[in-house]
Image (cartoon, rainbow, N blue to C red; front, side, top):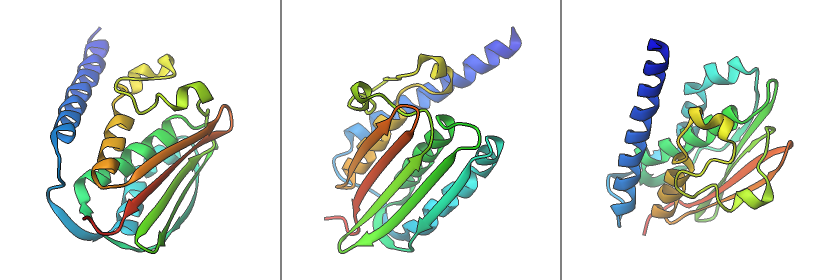
Length: 183
């Protein structure tokens, strides 16, 4: 019973934290604390932070990341990469593959994160950025349905876009486009 109480406490703490983060992000009209930093290096560090999770599922990585300086909120974007990469692990298969690509295109950066996991049905793809939405209720203890909502709000706050393409049992691809300079 103690283990159940501990796990539920962790889940509720995570939910409260995410609700507070989303509330802060939703009320923000302009970006604060923007600075110039190497986003390629930030994504590589995010991958390293999650290395033990990649290894625990024996997931292979295919990384093609260019160094590129961006003028943005470093802390917020770090949250984006950690969330998307963690989902790529969580909803991937044992011995799966995650590809992370980043390249500079004129005044913007194109980032793709692709996994070979369980995928998302076409009907559900349009709902994944909605608050508290979870397609797979069997994974409900692994999250609270706010991660992708927060990700989308952060990307939009930076003047960028995020799109999702997915095929059930084949995998999911997130495509993010961010401007290099904030207006």
